[in-house]
Image 1 (cartoon, helix red, strand yellow):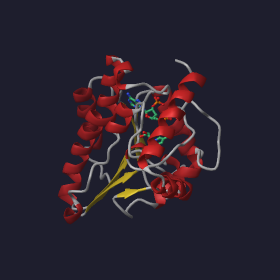
Image 2 (cartoon, protein in one colour):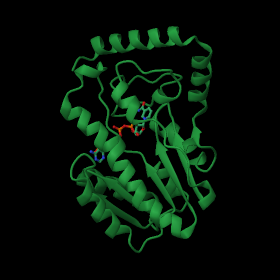
Image 3 (tube, helix red, strand yellow):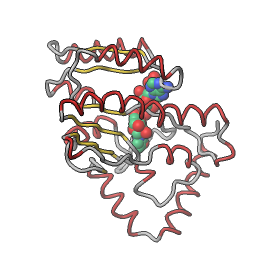
Image 4 (tube, protein in one colour):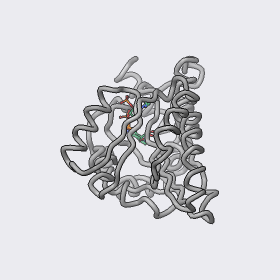
Length: 238
Ligand SMILES: NC(=O)c1ccc[n+]([C@@H]2O[C@H](COP(=O)([O-])OP(=O)(O)OC[C@H]3O[C@@H](n4cnc5c(N)ncnc54)[C@H](OP(=O)(O)O)[C@@H]3O)[C@@H](O)[C@H]2O)c1
């Protein structure tokens, strides 16, 4: 999404925990659009959130943030029942997917409210929308539930994108298929969808998948998802 946004002439503030990766991505973005103004902030969202927030606030003090994209998230690659999710992992998911996201949103919202404009995109997950439940990923699905719009009247568009499977670092099965899309395929429709709808599936293949999923009786879909998760765990043990 960063590449799609920068191609459209936006300047970016990149937030990430890995300084090397930030440097590399900044270099690639600069190579693509040399005129883009890029700022990067090292912030481990699972670590000291108040400290990161303070540095973020300082960095954006004099900047006009038009769009906030909450994309970072933690998950577990191997399916786990709730009691199998150890405390460290649970804490990481809650901190990254909820605490940090909420704090960052709050900081940016306060500025957007003053300007009476802005857009916030929360990259949620189809796991909390397409299927009635997401067996063996309940902690992840719970932390990805959509945040709804309270700010429309104030000129701020809050959107939750709920993509289905995208073949990225987060997922264990890297095989592409009709529904398992590449991040590059998702990025363009994701950016185009900003401003259109509150809970959206930007990518048409995911919409087809959702359509068929909704036709299936919940009990069958739940059973199928549970069996798939168990199979996946056998294929990709921890
Ligand atoms: N892949 C899918 O099938 C799928 C489906 C539905 C929704 N999503 C959502 O899509 C979004 C992007 O995920 P992805 O699939 O692109 O996975 P990914 O490649 O693992 O990307 C996750 C991003 O979050 C960052 N991150 C994780 N923990 C962090 C922390 N403690 N501090 C700062 N940054 C942290 C990662 O940084 P590092 O590079 O440093 O690890 C990475 O940039 C997520 O919100 C995810 O829930 C993905």
